[in-house]
Length: 424
Image (tube, rainbow, N blue to C red; front, side):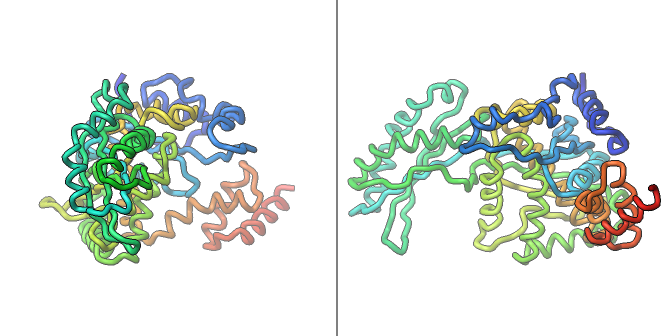
């Protein structure tokens, strides 16, 4: 049964009804998503096996972004976030891109890098060459450690060596390149680095210190692009203004930090919903933003020959479908099932596309109407809940504080008191 991500009016249903609708759109049984319900999600017993000193769990809302077409496939995308407007904004941007075929992606591969630090080498340049001469031996030694990864077509692929001047002297840094396939890869590359470090120390005639992966995953780049319809965006002036805003972010690190935060609103939400390592992905993306030596935007927007807006993004995404919380966390498993992805590359393609969509939505709001209008309208519901409104009262309180343009907790309490006095 083909997936359909175009579910109109999803927000008008109850959470239980939405779950049934997205299951139908994803072409799966609703029971497969049962773990998304709080009473069926991560238990204390399961949490106790994930981290230390467990005393409880924290719930983060999981919304579903609609309208995404990615490489010709419709995807309903789980997004775990506490920030209002993120899911709605991504869904709307995907709707605008859908007219021109949605998002197209490509990838540089699934290679992660482990670093082995060599200290106190008497002849660092000669030590570098000795290590490179032993490349085949070292790769074979590394691959002996993970025959299962090798059987799936992965494994250690290459070695390079850098001479690194530091404030405590010259160091020699070995990079072990490992194709980790559908894993995030940390365990595999760290194990291999530990295994070959003694032999590297022997070859270098020195000692090794750190032996660990780098989260600067620049050999695992995912690219996404989309055409956003000019008319649906609001016309030629909005397109021109988004291009100007994009150029601002490319040129100025102060603007780039907030521009990229908007991208990460989308990326981190999907990474978290699928049980992947948010900190690793965020570190990788921000280091990539500074790869030129100056922090800059991770995305670009430009106008095409037809007057539409073209968005592009390139980000390192070290994510996986095997191992870690992705397999151990029932809610993460439900998120992956909902997505319908079968490889880490497909997951990364979704994540990059959502990051671009989220970024477009933020830039459009800034260029067309100001960020506060839409964001604060949705945020008003959170404010109403913080003021003590019940589920049945939130809508009325939120509508009033938005209408009065006083979206603050203290005013929401006043409105709530009035509402309750009137209905008493």
